[in-house]
Image (tube, rainbow, N blue to C red; front, side):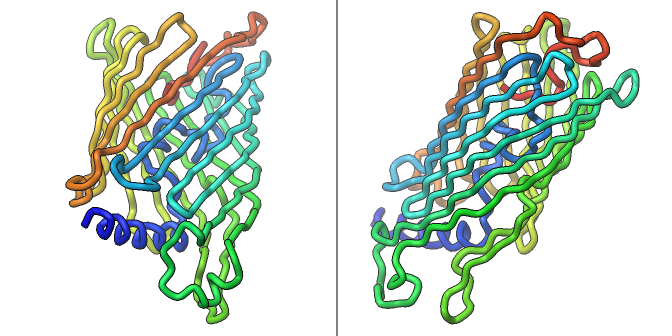
Amino acid sequence: MKQCIYSLIFTVTLSFSVNAQSGIKLTDYYHNPIQYNPAYVGVSNGYFVKGTYTTQWLGFDDAPVTQTLDVQRRFSNNRYAAGLSILNDDFGAVKNFNVEANFGLHLRATEKTGFVLGIKAGLNNFSIDYNRLNIYDPTEFVYSNGNLAETKPIIGAGFFFYGRKWFFGMSVPNIVSYRLEDEFNRDIYNKIPHVYTTIGFDSNISQDVLLKSQALIQMVEGAPISALLTTRAQYRDKIGIGLQYQPEALYGAFVNVRFKSEFTLTYGYDMALSDLNQYANGNHYFGLSYKFGQDEKCDCENDINNEDRVYITR
């Protein structure tokens, strides 16, 4: 019975993945802003490195698994930043692998506000291994031509506009559209641009506790608008506890601990707001970031945030 349910879920999700190409979950995007907004590059002075691992639907064979790596550097002039990000996303027979270069221009808009413009360029390799599927009719055109593997360009842009306690951002992580069709002109793979908007603000609960709240909104043609709402209480920038909620999709919590001043470890857990919860054991997120090499010559006196931008997530 469990295998039958999994097969049904896999079929529906595979169809959604191939045709709508929504990408990774919004909770993953929240913890990995560089994946949807290249203006996140240079979020900290010096070097910033972050790796993440996410697993979904524990209890199912071939459940989704995602790994990311983000390496970035804001240079000593405090104006330019560059970095490299890698994403590997596996769901059964479907795999996405991205390699992207990110570039950012950091400007001071007014005495109390800053502006960051980011661009990204890279490659996406999308593949389907039909040998991992239980195919009803292997003689169909889409299967008889062998496994599907396509490499396409990624070109994206975004910005952050921010103050000391608030920020607003918009981005399109890939403006390139493309599609693959079978012999009957039916879509096998349809990639369309996604638009992301994010807004957040900080408020002091006490001298030692900072409340960081954020909304991340995803818009794509042919699908309803999705929004992830998060709030996190941060104690002296050492430990944080947060809650996250995506209407009609999931809810969860996460905790981050900063140690030795440079490392931050994050763990998150969320559960689906659907019948899937009866069969899966939720989704787990692990992240580790490291900040180092802050340049003593950094021209930071003109920066409204001397160290980390207000929109940083560790």
